[in-house]
Image (tube, rainbow, N blue to C red; front, top):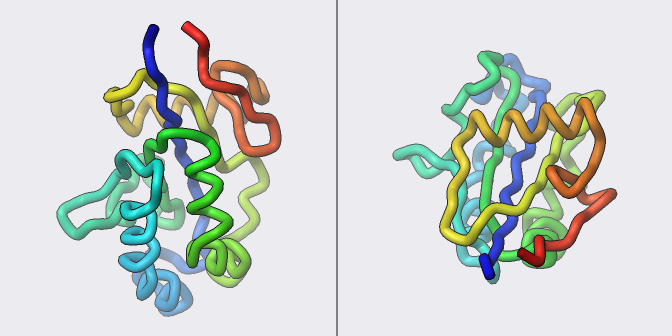
Length: 151
């Protein structure tokens, strides 16, 4: 029987013209701290990052205003704990200071076999699928979660 982990992508459209815009300064100044908390959290497996230890230089949507966060967690519960019970939650509460209302689903989750790391293209496809088709066992979000596969 295969074991599974949770893959998660979320995207956001910045109020700034790019990550270096002054409106994004406080957000950027805290990225290392927030990322370090993630990496030290129970259940954390992996996150997309570059040689500077962040993902803000990735631009898979070819849009300087969209930033991507892509990670793997042991479970929905461990991801939720990180998001809502750590310093990260302070930034969630303040997200309107830095980010525009996206207007569509901006977070997608799906189960992957333990040890698998999907590429960014697959993650983008999962988010697109969720936006077009809604939540299912294929891809879902926090509003409508699906348990790990049994097989």
